[in-house]
Image (cartoon, rainbow, N blue to C red; front, top):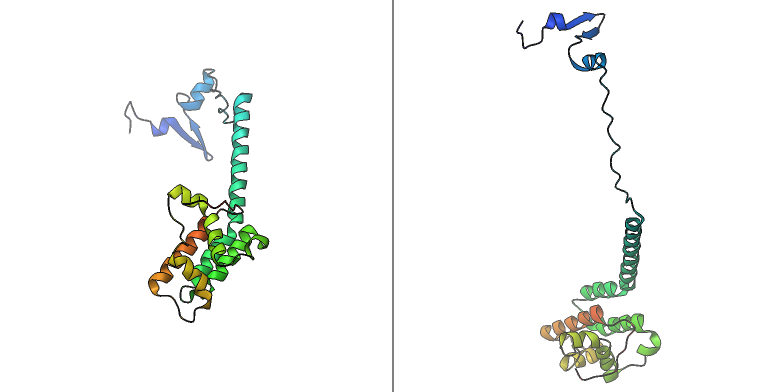
Length: 193
């Protein structure tokens, strides 16, 4: 193969004891003979900020993210009783007579035994409404424990028979709403909603 534009295998490569010798008219050998210097590349640009202002901004963002993460974690942990109560509410789907006790246990956890245990009857229903006041004002809704639903809650533990399915569904929905939405530790003054 002796084309003028192709490599000549005999002339360009000579094998001597497993060492390949390159012709001096090609590649690095040619560059070395003619005093060409290797190109020295610059160091890669650092991703680290070059000025103190950007460094301070980065540190401030990191601090803000850590503070928000800690607050989110504390909120998650402080609402563990709510998640546990909702799970118990789902578990008692067949026999809801334990529902008043569950609501009272949640209220004691959120507001303390001293404020919750003396409440009975209408004062208990008023307490449930006052602790849900902010949610009710925001949504322009009425108290889920007003009317027949509230009376069902008061008499549920003492009834020998279960409630009709529709009334039981309304009561479970009202209780779940209160468990998930009550203002923890805040008891508002009674207002007309």
